[in-house]
Amino acid sequence: MTENAKTHVILLSCGSFNPITKGHIHMFEKAREYLHKTGRFIVIGGIISPVHDSYGKPGLVPSKHRLTMCQLAVQSSDWIRVDPWECYQQTWQTTCSVLEHHRDLMKRVTGCILSNVNTPSSTPVIGQPQNQAPPVYQNHNNLANKPTAVKLLGKVSESLGRMCCARPSMDRFTFIDENANLGPAMRYEEIELRILLLCGSDLLESFCIPGLWKDSDMEVIVGDFGIVVVPRDGADTERIMNHSSVLRKHTENILMVKDDVNHPMSIVSSTKSRLALQHGDGHVVDYLNQPVIDYILQTQLYITASG
Image (cartoon, rainbow, N blue to C red; front, side, top):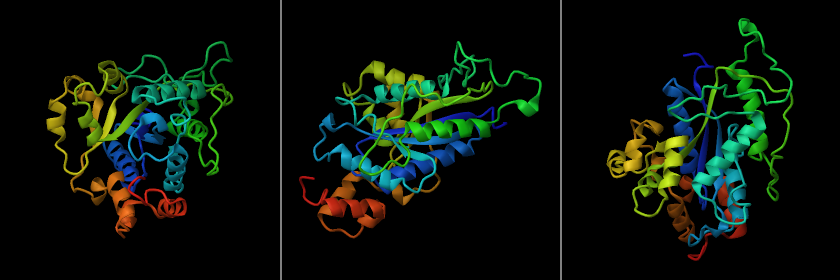
């Protein structure tokens, strides 16, 4: 399969990140590795979207701290970014709303027409905006002039860098101008781009809890976008799938990351990290990146049981 024929993917992870752990970063890395191994996908970016303060989870520290810790955790990554949009809204946003925001923002910034996981769009994924100059690439018989995945990566990477507030200063996160013009648009006829929700098996299992999720939201998340699941702590994902009619209905849209060996990071959690901090447990270095630990000690977060 040629690079252009592969589906280009942006992985989006929503959650408390209270605090962000090595396990969260490992989840991104394992998902990208697995998707690349299938030969069907190219992961071109990752987005971490911390939940709004009004989510109401006990012990949830203010978003300004969680955003900073997330940024510290990915400061050495060249493909994972932190996005503050969810935190900056007036109130808590559903996962469905966050996915739709990023889909719409990608359309505005790159001209993307994002397709359903199982129903590729019949129109170019990267299209020339209407009422503008003709496409840069008009001679479709000239292979030398046809856009490549490398060109798309450059275009979308630029967009992601602006969308996801790449490398902001620690005391200020800024938004991209959603009406920004990135310059002359190019038509990418053969490239498919999708935003997929990245999650652990615990979120997948929450889909089976009656009344926790709106059926309409689940249909959009799993049916329209699709999810990539990295199982945690020996979870029985097959049992989870069988307990939800929506999950069974959209099995083809659920990409389950397979790992021959249970990685130690699969049992790392924010809860364990907070307990380790409260008890002065030295194993916290196994759970959190050192810059995150340093920030926590500096701000005295999680040191007491109250958070």
